[in-house]
Length: 441
Image 1 (cartoon, rainbow, N blue to C red):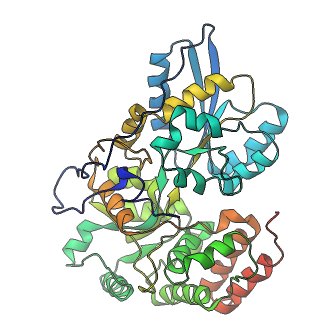
Image 2 (cartoon, rainbow, N blue to C red):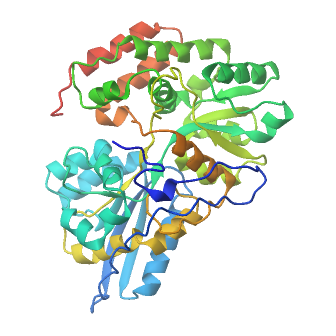
Image 3 (cartoon, rainbow, N blue to C red):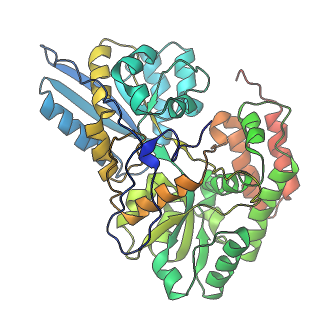
C-alpha cells in the first residue's frame, strides 16, 4: 500500500516549516485538479428525519458534527438530522443491538471494519456503497487505497468511506523544551537522552494512561513498527500463524517499554493513571510528553497554557521503512439498511464534499480529501502532523484485528511494567492467545 502523504493524495503534500512563529502553514499547490463529488439530489418533497450516530473519543468531538448538521439543514430545510454522539465503547455496544432490533441509525460515523464494521457487513446490515462511491466521486476525491485500508475484508467492495486520517506519536511541551535547551529527538538515543534530561529536572518525561491498557499498547505499537518488518506485522493482523507475537523484534520492543519504565522515563504511576488523567498531566505541564494520536489535536491546540507540538516516535531500527503504528484512515461513514437510504446517501455526499472537508480542515481535522488547492493548516500543531505524515508510512493498531489478542496485549504489558513477568513471558502470553484465533473469527 502506498503511503498517504505526498503520493496519491495531494492534500497531504506539505512543506516543512521554516519558522515556528508562523500563524499558519500553506502546503504547496496540488499536482492536479480533483473532481468534486456530485451535489446532493433535490431535497425530498416530504420532510425526512435522519438518525445520525457518531463515534467520539472526547466530550468536545460532537462540535464539528453539530456544525456540519446545521450547515446541511440550512441548505435542505426539509431534512432534520438527529445527532447522537456515543463514546467508543458505547458505540461498539449499542450499534449491534440496534441493528438486530431494527432501530439502527440511518447513517453513522463508525469505528472501522477492523473494529466493528466487519460484523455488520457479514450480518448483511449495511448498504453496499461501491457503485454509489464511484457515481458520487468519492473514489476520485479520496484515494481508493485509503478507502480500501478501511475495507480490508471486502475489497474491492466499499461499505464505509473515511472522513479523516489519524496518526499516533509524541505530543510535547515545546515551551518547556525550549527553556531546557532541548531539541526534538530524531533518533532513539536522542529520545532517551531527552527523557533523561527531563527526569533530571523533576519533570515526568512521558505520561501514559497505563490503567486503561490501550494507551500503553499504543506506545508499544510505535516501537514494533520500527523494529519489525511491516509485512510481518500485516501477517499478524491477518492472523497468519507463520508470524508470531513472540518474535525477537516484538520482545525487544516490549523490553524497551520495561526499561523506560524502570528508568523513570515513563510515568511511574501509569498503572493507576487512565487515559484522561495522562492527558491532563500533559496539559497541566506535569509531564513533558505524552503518546497519543490525532484525535487529541484540537484539545492540545487550545487547552495547555504552553505551546504543544508533535513529532513521530524515532525509529528503533532506522534501516527499516518508517511505518507508524496507528497511522491510518479514521472512522468511516456507513449507512445501515433502512427506509431512508436515499436521504442518508445525500447527507453522506455532503459530509464528503469539498465544502464540508474545508470546514473540517479548518476545525483541525486531518481530512483525506484531494483538494485542487489545499487550504493552509490552521495551527502549527496541525502542521506538525502533516509534516510527520509526509515523512512516514501507514501502520496498524494491532488490537482491533482480534479483540482477544488485543486484551491480552493490554494485560501482558501491564504485567510487564509492574514487574510480574519478563518481556519474553509477556509476548509468550500474547502468542498463546493468538494461536487460538483463526482468520475466520
